Image (cartoon, rainbow, N blue to C red; front, side, top):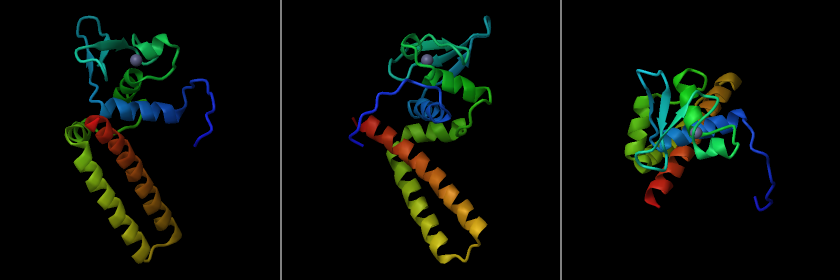
Length: 152
Ligand SMILES: [Zn+2]
């Protein structure tokens, strides 16, 4: 963890997914201007600000800095079915109280782990349940980061 490796910013699937998670956690919203057809995403950090994007280019600082990935493009890609992500409804709730939801998810994970240890599962079922637990744990981590951000 203490080794700092200088990396070029790349457009990896993981970075897209993280950017999308941040966009949801930050409550970013996406709109389409009905006259020009241009897509607009609200800023994660600047109230009242928004950026225009077509999923490839963006008018935000990240784009200007040469980063191939940003929350706005991630949200655009999700909106157009190019990235998988949570449903908008679940996200709205998550934004309301990330801390509470993190606790609920954490106890759900604990429950699933208990089920996994006591249920007589075959190898495939065990793997499927483990994968589900990992996915929920990822969501819990993302939410937890949001909760910390909200508290700070
Ligand atoms: Zn952007």
